[in-house]
Image 1 (cartoon, rainbow, N blue to C red):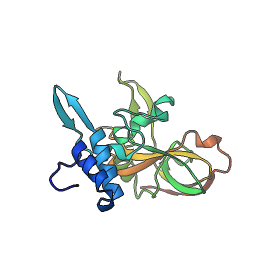
Image 2: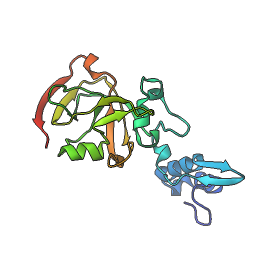
Image 3: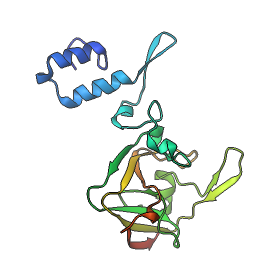
Image 4: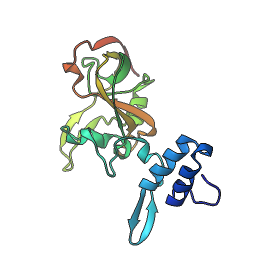
Length: 197
């Protein structure tokens, strides 16, 4: 921030650009993002309390991205619709909590869960899924953690876990990875599995 200016303002951004040799690139980026998060509501400027909203390429506010076009709109399962898209440059290992007969699903984490409760709370996985009318649309049994190798060239979507209500919290500090229909990919390897309690 430039002394004598308000952070996240056009004045601050302009001054920082003039003195960019004294300002860090990260600070310039943050100020530009914060300026984007300002919205006019009833004649007043309203700034999002989440300054990370624009650190992701896609978000539920003004750029839902490609996952908005996928069946079920998986972008809505990221916190505030925040996520990035990446094509893996090399194979990568991910983890998935699920049932003992189905190693592949579309949601993964980068670290193995420690318990069923960990999956339910931090990854926001409900035991039953209901539609807006209260009709059962699916269930999620969790008794196993899988270690899965995903091949280079795979498109992944990564961001914070969206809250599903109740104890199924997720949150900005818990990341998840969405891989669309990984069972159709060549060279996906199930490296191991173990029971979860």
